[in-house]
Image (cartoon, rainbow, N blue to C red; front, top):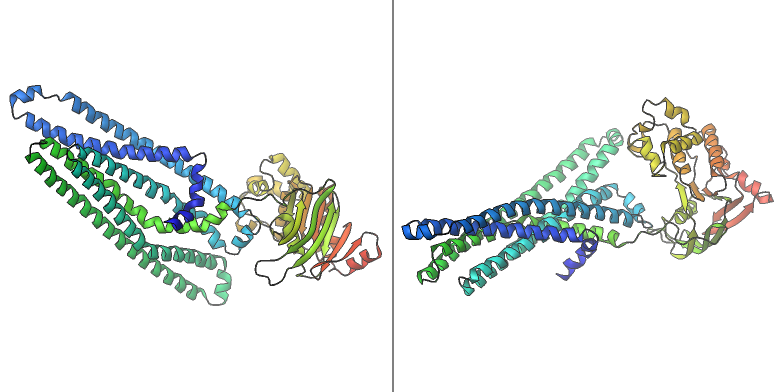
Length: 563
């Protein structure tokens, strides 16, 4: 039990947010709905029986008060309807708020250094976390906590009501309802756990293979592996169907157990109430009341069946999303640098997760405001790693990093299946159309955008399909220009572009940079020739530094790849 609570602790911590009262209110309304339904059924049975008996004798028929019970029945009927409406409204609103808070916390957790990069290695896993894992957690509230609270309240109310007839009968019915109902739910959850976990893993595998088939169909077709990939998908799907069949059988057995409880317990209560009635302690209406409220009390326990089946899946989702929920979002670059500086690194050591040795060791660097620095050196020496560290994506294993607010242009142009406007708003969510057009003009895309029939509302395909490589790079450049920050981090900004396009992009970058500091990782001469300092990385650190105008500056440029 302690391990279960530990698994759910990060998720349950969201209940203390602003939606906590809604969650509690929804659970209270659900319990009230169940109690009113029980009262309605029990009082109706009592009233019908009492009315029938009173009608047998004219004297009692005239004296019998039909108005109070009928008014109470109407009150319970209207109250049950209103409570049901309120319960649906409040619980669903609270659940949607809970899921929204959960997604927000997950994104903040994934913004921690290294988290997003690790998830990017497994895009199918990221998709699964965003959809199936988040959706699975709503069962904790809607299908476990709310039905469990309603069932216990129904059992308690039934026990109290029957205690007025016989304290022993009330306690016995309460104990049987709680022990049997929770026992069946616990056994169902335990029996369903293996199949549920296998099913979750196979759904994730199925999604990953479908993504591989869709994204790599050209390579698979050329290699003649399409039939094999389809066969693998069919095998996973068949095993998934087998798991579904096992879960359906477990659910059927749980339904049978609840059905037996709903049939046997009322029958036993009827026998016990009849025996009490034979002793003259209650009448036939009291027997009807005891029978019907017992029948109504078994229904909430049947609602636990679905939650018990989904509990293992919810626990797995809580365990997998828990670390991200607990991880506080870190500001990019941590604390700011000293006045007059854009970035400061002191004795920094960087190591990738799978690396045996650090990529950079004991590195110290200071970048002044407005200074332009180029990081050069052979591939694999740590240029991109240093950019990632400055961007806050790769935390140092030792040393300190202080960076002002920065924007980063990565090697790969990241565009999304959305409009041009929304792709640009990633750089500045509050940017106006005029500001976007100004950035597009600076990036050299104004004429192209005006030629499009829908302008900024033009839809792009996956990865920016619809634009050429140069146009996509310019769009990423326009997005960078919308970021009003004092430091730009540029990782091979013109890689893959032809010489003419690359020089035009660089000229626009230099013009837009203005007084901003820039740090560029490159191995191409054109990207480094306007730098104020060249830092040559090698042997785990800065092997050499050349200032513009020094004898080694031009020699270092000549060692770079020409256009």
